[in-house]
Length: 145
Image (cartoon, rainbow, N blue to C red; front, top):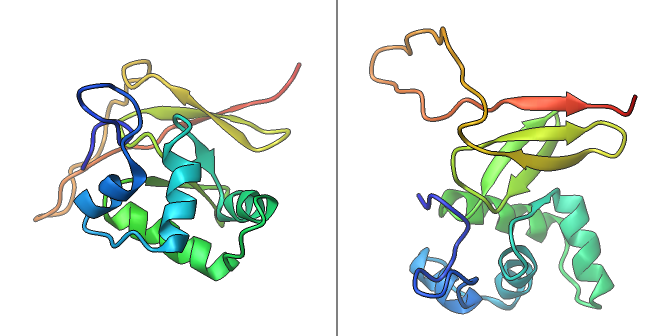
């Protein structure tokens, strides 16, 4: 899995979406290309399927919400996105797949990255036999004072 967002290693800029999808083993269909451009060609993002669906509709493209969900999960399985479950049923997809944590701005549900080394977690239990801990997600909730 990638340690950062899918970037061109030479330029540090977002890779060509078509090439990015092919390298991840995904065929660059019209829907994947549309969603991939929105996700990967504008810097790191945190989006819900509903937000992404609204962005696509705003472009005048027709992609069903089910297709958005399916594509986000395909991107996640390919290592292009990280999924964060917030408040039980709300899932955010993060284009930054590095080991990092998040602030959650409670009034509007916006996520912001916290640097990977800014939080340390101690006292984790031993995982069951045959398993390993891959990541611990920490969400620090913020509210205005």
